View 1 (cartoon, rainbow, N blue to C red):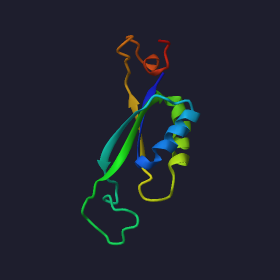
View 2 (view 1 turned 60 degrees about the vertical axis):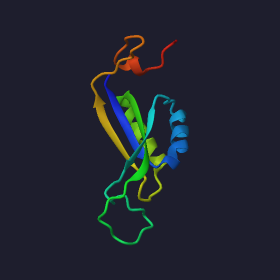
View 3 (view 1 turned 120 degrees about the vertical axis):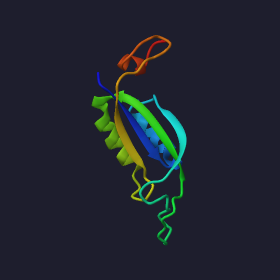
Amino acid sequence: MELVRVEVIMNEMKMGILKNALQKYHITGMTVYKAMGCGVQYGTPEYKDEDTSEIDLLEKTVVMMVLPREHVDNLIDMLKKELYTGHIGDGKIFVSPIYNAYRIRTGEDGYEAIAHSDY
């Protein structure tokens, strides 16, 4: 089974919305971390009038999930719907292939390494 990594870079204020949406789709495995960054607007807030060429790094939240490839299209559609505001800073979604995954405790690999297991 082909696995992919989905990384969502977004505003921290949307984390509650994202967690609720993922729970509806029974996705519970995720890694979340804080990051600093900017997009093509150099980190300029939407409400700022003047043009700037100086980069301003903004606080972001990154959510990383690994799941089977056949689930990705539905996940992306849901993420785009739930995180959309139409304003600068809605975020980005990156999808990349995963060669393999290993669960250290049990030695399982592939899908079994990321799937729910009995303790």
